[in-house]
Image (cartoon, rainbow, N blue to C red; front, side, top):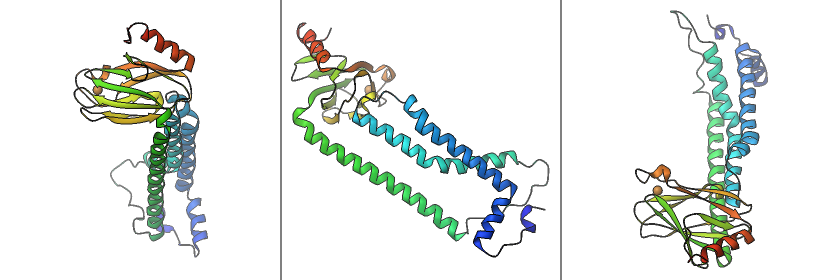
Length: 266
Ligand SMILES: [Cu+2]
């Protein structure tokens, strides 16, 4: 005999919900839902900013914001799935006679409408958010171009190299000054790579014969990890170098120290 057999349908939707919520399995699942939702909200708002890489640019800040808010928005949904799964697991039946299935909800009009509409809404928010960010970024890149520091980035199996045309220096580490927009002209000498200065929050393909351009606005000083984000052969995992977002004075002395040794970083 399952619980459902003795249920008498109350007359109004409000009374039906109240009866539904009084069921022990439902109230326990509800408490689990609150718990898991809270866990994910705390994870998004408190743990992510501690776990993610340093934020050294506007772009990295907006990446982090998106990660945090999407985690918070999806927390109740992950919570529903986990709470039902946990409750089902704890209730698991032992023995030869499985209980009857519960009432199907796939034919329940309001439930289907609510979950479809909610999913559509989330997708639209994500698409609009992404397109607005992309467009804002393109406008900023064009507006900032005249005052940007230019860095020509070359990927080759398996190292990055940099050329600063205005300063006429060749380097294998990449320093840039804070509070000045920077434009990276990225190309490859051989196979496809992907230029990824982690703490700047930008990542762009490095292709042979075609220059790809990416733009960043450094907002804080700190160390940079520069990696390849496209599987490019045997030593792909070791295709990394370092650098820093520096104060303008530190950047200027780094540049002149390289110019003093013939324009090539030792
Ligand atoms: Cu690579």
